[in-house]
Every structure is written in C-alpha cells, then in structure tokens.
Length: 486
Image (cartoon, rainbow, N blue to C red; front, side):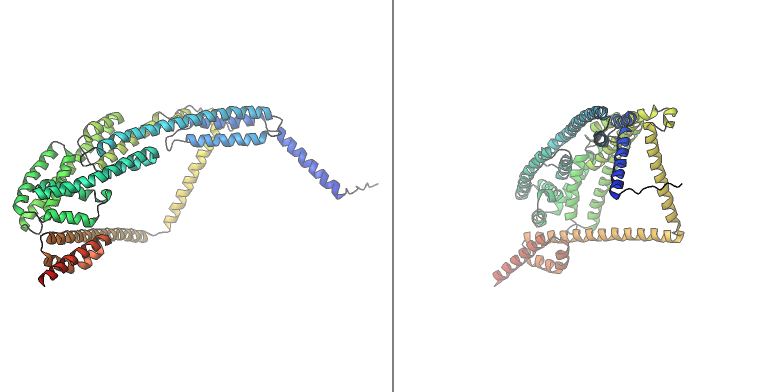
C-alpha cells in the first residue's frame, strides 16, 4: 500500500528553511578554528617583521601595518557570537599591541629621518644665502627640497630667501650704477652679469635689465675692454689650473658678456679670437670638472660608498664643481648605498635565505602563500611580455623602420624649432639693449630707426611688458627731440 506524503503549509516551509539557514550559520561559527586564527595572526606578524623601507624589496612597513589592521578587523568581525570569541580577541589584542608599537616606531623613525634630511640642508643653505652674491637658483633647489621634507622649515627658508632677494636686488643695482659713475667698469660688469643670471629669482624685469646693460655698454671703450679681456682670460686659466671652478665659472660669465658687447664695435678677426679663447676656456673648465666626477665614480666602484662620499665632500664640492654635476654624483652614491642595503642589510633577504625546502613545500605554511604570490606575479609579467611581443609581431620591419624615422624626424624638427626660438629671443634681447645703448648715448634718431626696423621682431620675441616700456621710451625721446628742433 502506497503511503502518500502530506504537503506542508507554505508558512511551515519558510520556517523550516530559516531554521536550516540558522543551523548552517551556527555550524560555520563553530568551525572558525584556532589554527585558522593562528595562521592569520602569524601572517600579519611575519609581514610586520619582514617589512622594509627599501623600494623593490617586499612589503613596506606602511603596507604591513595596513595588512595587520585589516586582519585584526576581519577577525574581530568573525569573533562576534563565535564559540572561540575570547581566544580570537586575545590573539587580535596581541596583534593590535604590536601594530601600535610598529606605528610609533615608524613615526619616530620618520621624524628622525626628516630631521636628518633637514639638517643636511640647513648648513649649505645658510652658507649660500650668506654669500656676498648668492646663487638663487641653487637656493631655490634647496628650498624645494625642504618643502618636500618639512613645510615649517621650508617656510623659514622661504622667509630668509625673500628677505635676501630684496636686499641683494637693491645692493647689486646700486653697486652697478656706482661702478658706472666712478668708472669702475670691472665692478659694473660683474654686477650686470650677476643680475642677468638671477633676473627671474630677483624679480628684475627684462626692460630694467636692458636699461642697466645699456648704461654700462654705452661707456665701453674698445681699448679698455681689450686689456681687461686679455688679463682676465689669463686669470681664468689660473683658476681652472688650481681647481677653483666656482670662481672660474663666474669670471667666464663676465668675460662672455663683455666679449659679446664688443661684437659690433671690434674688428671681426679680433672679436673671433676673443670669442674662441673664451669657448676653449669653458671647454677646459668642463673637462676638469668632469675628470673629478670620473675619479669619484671610480672610487665609488672600487672603494665603496664611504670613500666616494668623502671624496665628494672634501674634493669635488670644495673645488666648486657645478652643483648639477655634484647632484648626479650624490644620486649615484645613494643608489649604490641602497643597492648594498638591499643585498646585505634587509631582514627580507635574511628571512628568505633561511627558508628550508620542506617549508617551501608545505602548502599550509605562510611561505607557500608568499611563493605562490611571487609565482603569480612572475607569470603575469611573462604573459604581458608575450602579449606585447605578439602585438609587435604584427608590425612589419619596414613599418618599424618608418616609425623610427618619423620619431627621429619629429625630434629633430622640435629641436630645430627650439633652437630657432632661442636664437630669435637672443636677437630680440640684443636689439633691445642696442636701442637703449643708443638712447644712453643721446643718439635718439638712430635708436628710433633701429626700433622701427626691428619692431616686428621685438614685439614677437620679448615680453609684452618689456616691449611696452621700450616702445614708450623710444617714442617719448623721439617726440622730445622733435619738439626741441621746432
């Protein structure tokens, strides 16, 4: 006899399903074992112990702390209503205590590192800002560095910098005008070249600089300049020979400007001789500086970071090698130091070196998780490289050559355009100074004619404010001479 089952009411069916779901959740809670908790906590502890601040050598401390916090929060959410709640919270408490210690240690280390970096900048900054005529481009670099390290110290740098700029601007202009008035043109030229090299930081408009340059050049006499150029070229040679590179670079800047000012009033053969002598002096200066940098590089390679840093501080910097070359050498020393630290000092390397084969093969260990992640990343890189290679395979050899040629042509075109732009700007600036020189010599008609002939060039390649000042000055002087003639 067949037995027929009775249908349950719908309400009873829902109630049965709810009870089944609750029973499953209860069972799931019971299976949050101590082994799972211990493994999760150990993984977080391992990351904290193995974390390093060296780029490319595993998890950084900030990431390890973030991972530990995530683990703690996840376990605390699991602990609610769990039969092992007390054990889970106890283990989480241990982890959070360690996180607290690591965060405080990291904060202290960062503060100490920041203080060291700031202290490394304070000395050179104070030395440079205290010079008779400081290099404001170098000061600006140090200010920007301080800005990335400690904004309060950078504010102090900025305040000192602005105060020094205001003082130097007044001093240099007054010194130049005094040199012109007393006939001390060596002093006037030195101040003029300094103002030219620091126009932007000092906030000197191009029109003002052009007037000052014209004031000096209007008094230039070929005989006097010829004697100065010969004497100072010999002085520059001596400065280069004794490795006084900063002094040589300053003197060469003055020489270059004085020779350039004689281009239109000196015989071409004589001017060419002066120009090429200056050029050879500058090349000699570059070679001597580069030779010290090469020696420093060899010391870094053969004797290590400490010896290279000593040579940099005691020889290269004291010789006045150009600060950009010094900066590149400092970067090379830093990279070598970081590489040495990666290979010798990091806890990550020591930890990985101590892993036994049996540990690596244990699928339940923390190390297997790390190795699996590493293998996954390596496979992703390989797949990416293969895809890129396959994509490149679709480009024929001829197309590749054509693309390469197009890139080269575009680069050459851009370079020619930049060079042409610079040449036109230089021409326009020189024309403006020449016009002011004529005005300074009271040759107003010549100045007006030259301005009219080159007005389009001037309007396009000098700043609008400088052009406006030039235009109003020339026209005002020209109108004044016309009224006088009447």
